[in-house]
Image (cartoon, one colour):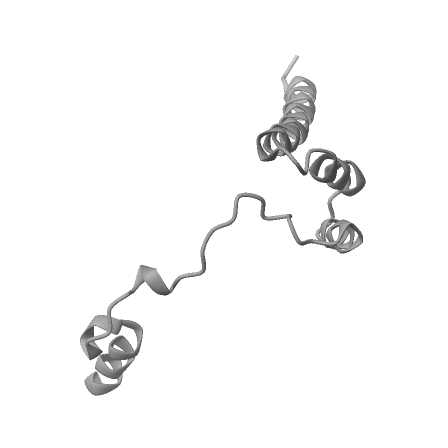
Length: 100
């Protein structure tokens, strides 16, 4: 019974077998992760995840494709609007639930 637990831990930990994590073998990062992505495929991906602003998000990404900093700002603005809307709704709910 204890050998099962031991063998499980051996499979998880690579250092037991002498293997080390080698960052040199990792895939290199790219500046623009949307660089080789089809606009329609990205739209479908956002829609499948239930994003109500999929079209606006894709437009933001591709309109600023030449400037990753502007893309990031546009996406953060969408996220902030979503957060603001949530806070407004939460405030209204809190207001209606207050005892009078």
